[in-house]
Amino acid sequence: MNRISLVGLCFLSLLSLSRSRAAIPVVIDTIKVFDESVPPMEAKNRTLAFARECAIQKAVPELVATSSLISDMRAEVGKTGEEQTSFSIFAISSQAGYIVDETVSPIEMKPGNGVIRYHIRLKAKVEPVKGERNPSIALDLQAKSNYLKDGEQLILTAKSSVDGYLYLFYFLSDNTVLLMFPNFISKDNLCKTNIPVQIPTLEDQKRGLRYVVSAIPGRKVTAENILGVFCVNKIAGIDQFVGVKQGMALVTGGDESFADFQKWLANVPLSQRVEKAVPIHIVK
Image 1: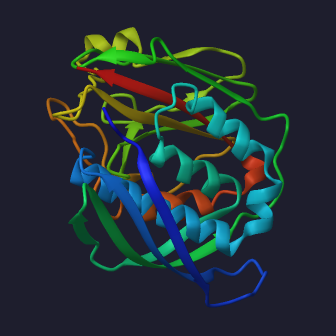
Image 2 (image 1 turned 180 degrees about the vertical axis):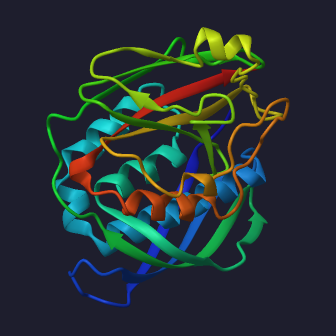
């Protein structure tokens, strides 16, 4: 599958040079050029993700540049060479700044000479991260297998260094977000210190809860990500996210889910939480 982006041009205009903790307004005007073999929806999603990444980097460049965690988290999912647009923006936002509001103009598509040009204009408000990390808070989150066949079950194991609450999100390739855990069956998301938790548990599986992955039609490999957020306290507002439902295949989290996730995470101080990413590759 040819997923090579030939050109990426980014023209940025910073509307406010304030370095306060208030949201910083930014305008991004960007063009990305793809080979014609790249599916239109994939190209559109990657262009939007690129614009969001540019917005955060322009608004808070010093935070992006000084965060070793961003480099470490990117390396974690980049071992296969697959472009992880959904994770890349999450890695930057969780460590540097959150897009708490955005307006996207219609994306223009111009084919020609064997390539397709995608033009997007994004107006965003970026809120810098607040506080310092607590090194005593750690989360170990792993998948039983990171490579799954279409229709296979996904099983995760989580272990935390302190008592707290775990939230699992599925970042889809269309840049939308689904809430995996807690859910309609597994409502208790409390994790005890150094006690492994399987998700879903054997008991939950007997009650009908299964996470079955699906590949995107026309692709040999679909790259997506599980994102775990662990917090020492319960986080309010979780009901706003689209979650897994019994007997229903969910293919998108909704257009507003990315911005909703950013706002939700922005309300939790860095000193109270930690994040962990798990890359998933689905093979046809």
